[in-house]
Image 1: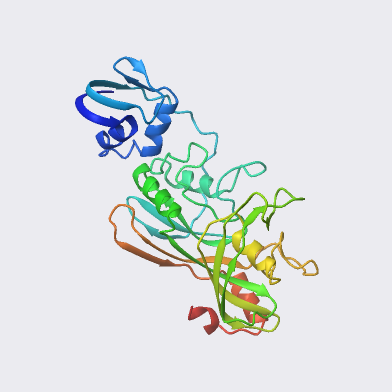
Image 2: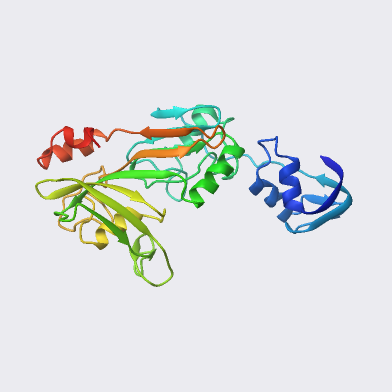
Length: 311
């Protein structure tokens, strides 16, 4: 592809983003990757600097590299689709499902299921291993997950996440009685010093993390809470409640040592999302009901159905 123009002083990446704005195939991040990888020529010379200044008469040649084929197998897995349009879909992720393939998890992931459903309509920004994936939730955490169906929506959603413009609320069942009706856990999170698969509250090599919570109901030996996260650190809610001595019930990594674990995993559910649609700019408000295993545990703890129906 060639672009010929006469321009006032402008950065190469900005010019290309504006020139190709009508195409969902050329997101800002994709254009920046093309430049960095040497796929852009300016007046016959390869240019790899995104901030290279264009001025005057220019001829830009864009080479689109051959797309590598994915090694991920599409799988026919039923998904609970909560919302879908031409640009995004929101799925209620089940327990025990990894979002994308990785070491030891090559089948049965959300990506396998999405590819088996409609491989052509997923964004490519995440690469061939993570098509459509905008954000993640843990394997044994259930609830709402946003998927981008094209690069333009993916780019906008990524910026919204970065700027904390997507409101996410979780419901958790934690051990012990939380005496405060509401609270803020403001504690930095970093990699665990002894177990690289875990995270911990630490001042060393850590990132700022804030979790807000409200008590829904105090039960026999547990407390039902709803949480809103201001940051999105790995295992954030699980680490924060463990830090305040109220670990999440049935958490295989951060739970009570004496607790008899079940295969379901932590009682943590991403139940609410609120955000402006990345393309239409209309407000989207979604909820996903708690899974049966979660509600059964609430009932075992002396709760009633109205405890979660009125959240």
